[in-house]
Length: 121
Image 1 (cartoon, rainbow, N blue to C red):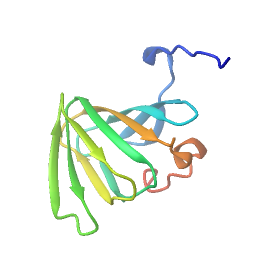
Image 2 (image 1 turned 90 degrees about the horizontal axis):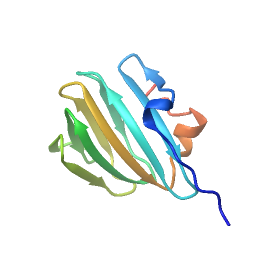
Image 3 (image 1 turned 120 degrees about the vertical axis):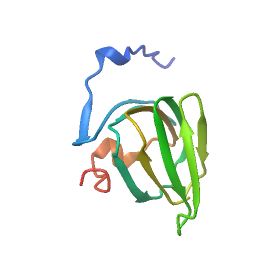
Image 4 (image 1 turned 60 degrees about the vertical axis):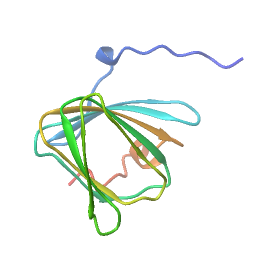
């Protein structure tokens, strides 16, 4: 029988990824849950990944640019969810201090290995 794990966000250390972005990660075998803390004006540069992503905004708002040309713009505010299919290019900017919950399947190998250089600039 597999082990059950219990977590408290407040007990977990935050990883500072850049001066304006911090996160906490919980990873299972086939999914990852992240609290991502973005300061107002924080930009997540355009990128894509093989992982399916669900972003749920708890506080604040993120503006997304979707697609290779970034012409589809979507503002996702507190209480709203954005689903991003695998391999869809996207960029985001925090319109205010924001706490978002990201769910990835499979887990983001680049986040776990800290090779997510696009975030660490």
